Length: 351
Image (cartoon, rainbow, N blue to C red; front, side, top):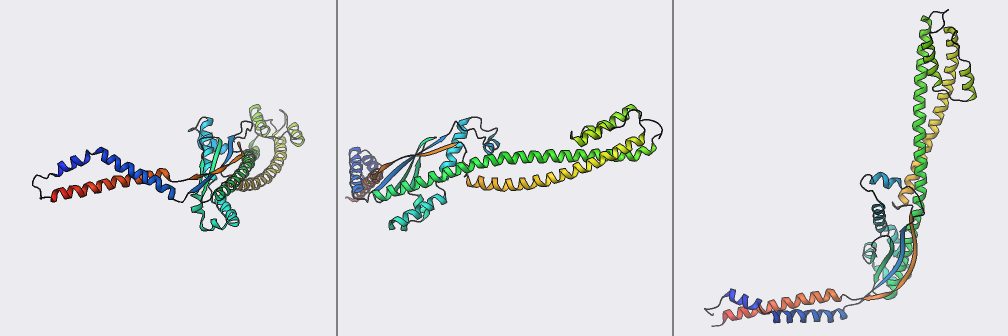
């Protein structure tokens, strides 16, 4: 064993052999590049489709507005949200599984893939609205081309269906909102009729205490007339009732007889309102159910999206040259490290 041997000196010497290190790395990278040609090649096919927001449509996407305000304030946020939704939609199980089943019927090669493995062979390349590239990889050019065409066709068809269903959902939502507003108005009117009816009943009960031969005070008369006329429907029946209102010189019993007729009219209005509310509740239930179904089928896509196919491209061969070069370079570096370790050990053991 050498007495003048120092590990630090040996490491310093080894780490400053840059030409030698570079030679090993380059040799490893070259071997990796050559090995990539021995590696089984795969093929990647591409199909392009156009995805855009149609400026000539004016559907009001209330779901987005409800979710986004006040966080988002411009069309770019809406566009990016929709592009993300669409990107997730084209990889849904229903589209991937349908494509895989079609491929399996055409070629036994695809029988070895399950939906998860097949999904890993698919990729969507996009930056924003405009041209999207849908790619698929396989061991043969025809197989890759077949997969890319079927997937892009299925994705485009399903997306178009989703947009159409989203348009229906928007219209259903508008109808639903109008129905809810009608319900609210009908309930408020019912409450007002019931309140007025209660006032009339209380006034009739208290009329016994009024002087029977003395007309009502003018303020009390106007207050009573206001309570009735503010809710009157201007139909012929109500107009006749209002026209029959007692005059300033009429006695309390005349007002009692008139108010009893008003009560009958209010009872009829309440029955009609109850029927109306029952109908509106049924409509609301129906519209909520239909809207939920359409909204689920729409995949959350905007009714303003425009989708159409463009073209398919010839498959390109893919070899893992970059990966193999990197692996070869790392192996070359490890080979150099192993050789230096051996030389340092031998130098230490020399007498």
